[in-house]
Length: 233
Image 1 (cartoon, rainbow, N blue to C red):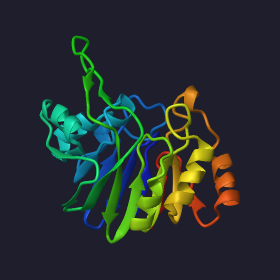
Image 2: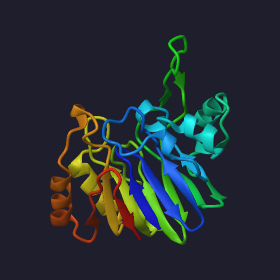
Image 3: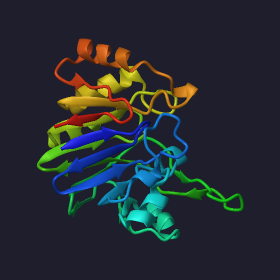
């Protein structure tokens, strides 16, 4: 299985059973390696919440590929208005797709559907979420935009995590120290930092995070991916 990073919080996961994309913020992302036009075949588009740097180009990519947008009910309903396929879920629920199983987790963050046209208004888009994804018998966790919360320990206890993708940018999400503490609760084999350095306000040094992780919780390995780089598991 290949986990490919495309900048900010966008990951592409490629397995024998299918290919999915998470939080495809591409066109307006100054750090990405690809654009929405580079995706022609997908089996699912997972979106953690409605903010523009996560919903991103999901609608355009879904309409072009036919891949369903998977997310909380309210956000899925809003995306369906734009002619996309969707699969609505909610926190705690799971569903098995052709590419694997997806379970939604809580995320301590907001969510709003931002207007695509000037005459449109901001719309409530449900709650933010994270994703537990089981592909080829391996559990992956994309935390979405979130602060630290104690139930991360329960997530790690119930799901032996191969990889956790955790935000470290601070200000809007966890910072480095909170992400290390979250790792201690989740206990994944590998942690990939995300949601940093896209904008000046979330500037962080991922090497510092990996070093801190090694000192505080060496049982998990920190893995920095640059846009376009991959981790094979």
